Length: 453
Ligand code: ADP
Ligand code: MG
Image (cartoon, rainbow, N blue to C red):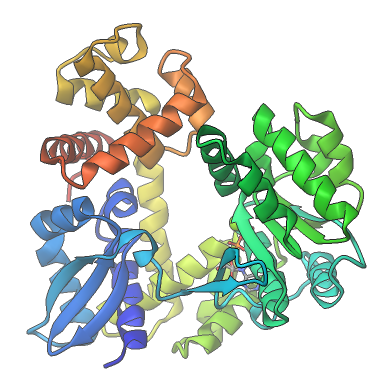
């Protein structure tokens, strides 16, 4: 069996696991895994780091194997977790393009292969954004510059951005697509290593620059400033710029006020949540692409349930399919209702993971009062516990780094970012630390799940 089917089997398995383990558990340990290979009854799962590999090996191997056995109907299957580094989590789905341009500079661009115009379902809610994106892909630098696409989470902004990029790439354009977070990190590194000139020239020489989630840079003074210059240089040279954001420029707050007017120079388009018909069309298209067995009634049912987010719409479809496979049944509306209800009701009964809960768990594990974590103490042990708290808060909550800084007694966002990096770097070979975090994880899971399975 080839790689493609390993990936699909694993996606179905993940769908089934999602309804069996708690949400934080799923997010921490399973979400970033991929099916790599399935041969001779050995199923290889790619995981992002050794820490996760060890945890799964120790704690969830039997559940995973049991679920896999149900899905592939083969009683002898055994699972192996393989660490595949940074790209491993979805290397199967992403295509990394590395091209040397004339000046010998390496431009690495990463696109999701299936984020193309052909797979984008157009409806009233996204028609304008879609047309503008296509116009730009056809005539970069000539129609609207910049193109600014905004809308809520999971509505297709990144999809359109990659679609533009892949057309440009096919035409051998020097295109770069980065998230604003990557841009910021790269800039900060360049500052630290005194390589800002290289940084500038890398961006200045592009034919097209695609920046995802630009709102991330708002409030970061130096990054805003650097982006302002990059923007001007590219724009003056008629190089196409496309930006996405969760808000329109007018609603964003910048330290560099002039950024806002720059963003409004071109065309600003919104993507709205899709209407029922579009949701249904998206589900039909996904089911068809993946050759899934469903009925119109099941798709209609899902389209009625999930209204605000296309990523969740897809997730629900996967869940229903996985549920059906688990019960060796064809998907029916009753089964779909059960699959989605199960998740919905768990979301209602499981209290959200609050910052207070995380601090409590970290404090418990390090035997300190939560007040020590938020306080002024700077001894080694407290500093370590605080870093771990920052790391876990990033993993377990949707707080921004700035908010996490606040929670920990008004610390800098950059301190939170650095703590995260430091802990991640140490996890690979510091068993004490990885065990600590597993501990904390367990405490959190225990405290946030009222009824243990
Ligand atoms: P955003 O960046 O706005 O948060 P994404 O672009 O990541 O959202 O989209 C979330 C998921 O929904 C992706 O898998 C994407 O392919 C899918 N999606 C979004 N809009 C559409 C659409 N109009 N047609 C098909 N799939 C879509
Ligand atoms: Mg996105």
